[in-house]
Structures are given as structure tokens and as C-alpha cells.
Amino acid sequence: MAEFKHLVIVKFKEGVVVEEMVKGMEKLVAEIDAVKSFEWGEDLEGLENLRQGFTHVFVMTFSKKEDFATFAAHPSHLEFSGPFSAAIEKIVVLDFPSLVVKPLAA
Amino acid sequence: MAEFKHLVIVKFKEGVVVEEMVKGMEKLVAEIDAVKSFEWGEDLEGLENLRQGFTHVFVMTFSKKEDFATFAAHPSHLEFSGPFSAAIEKIVVLDFPSLVVKPLAA
Image 1 (cartoon, rainbow over the protein chains, first blue to last red):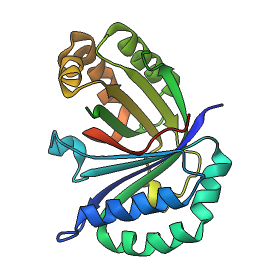
Image 2 (image 1 turned 90 degrees about the horizontal axis):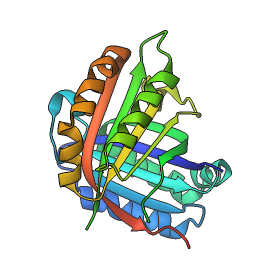
Image 3 (image 1 turned 180 degrees about the vertical axis):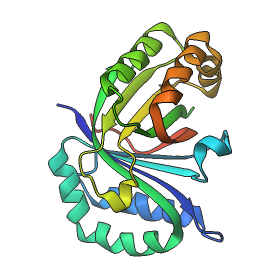
Image 4 (image 1 turned 120 degrees about the vertical axis):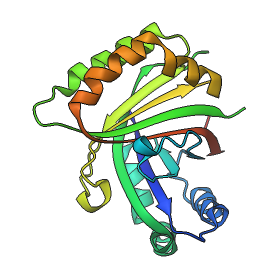
């Protein structure tokens, strides 16, 4: 079955300490077993016409959609969404079953 | 070393046959060895205030940033970028080293 992914891309407000936000997310995924893996990154290329001001990517992976629903409704997630929402200037969120076309090389 | 990711989120123009775009990308990653893996998905949740009109996610993974540079400069990629650009209404692209916080469970 396809893994289910929760993708968040953001532009943080000026003055936000990104490391604190990441720590909050690390705590979240450590607490909530439904999260299979978590990865994040900061855009390095800076192709401004393509990145549209967004700077950071956060991706959580779940074994199935139901696990994402468990995560989304978890009290720790709801608690974190307050300070996170306050820290962002803009955001796009996409939730999707992930179809892998070229498998990872061994 | 961190894997390097090329993330593309788009809203396609009306009438675009998404399957044809995906086939084009599948062909691309089959042709270009530098691409380690390719996955994609279509947003299912439809939380319009969060997805901002974007509907599809495409992620290519590379072992290192140099492989991404190889891909980006590859003639097949450059050739595909024409019809792809013509098919999209809006796009965000982020290129980043991916930091995995919670490893995949065995």
C-alpha cells in the first residue's frame, strides 16, 4: 500500500528561530508513534522565481492514511499548531498517498 | 551525507492530462541515472485554505547535490521543462538537503 505523506512548505516570519520550530516538530514525532518518519530541509538553490518566497520543507510519512488522521487529531499536534501558525508568513500543505516510481537503489 | 531533494508542487492548467505529465517524468527518471528515486502524489484532503490551489507533488531524490546538478543540466530534463512549464498554472520548487529526524522503522 502507498505510504501517506503530510507535506508542509513555509516561509517563516522574520525573527523566528527555525531551530526551535524544528525542535518542536522533533518532539512531536518522538511522542506520536503514528509518524513513521520525519524529514525536513531548507532550500539551497534560491531560485526566487521558482521558490516563490518559501524557504523550508517538512515532510511526515505515515504507513497509511489512518495514521495521518491519528497524528492530525493528536493533542500534541493540536497544541503545536498554535505556535507554529503564529511563526509563519505563508504556508502550503498537501496530504497525499505517495507513489514511488523509481525504487531506491539497494 | 544527506540526500538531496528536488520538490515541485504545482497546479495544472485546466484540461491538462496529468497522466501524460507523469509519464514524461517517469521517462525522465528512467533515462537519467543520477535520479535515485521519484515519487509523486495528488492531494486528497482538499483543505483549500492550506493547499492554496496546489494539487500535485513531485519529489526526486538524489544521493548528493552534484547528482541533482547533473539532472538539472541533462538535455532530457531541459527538453521536458518546455511542455511541463506550458501545462502549469502555478508552481513552487524547493531544492534542499533532506535531514531525516525519525528513521524509517525496520
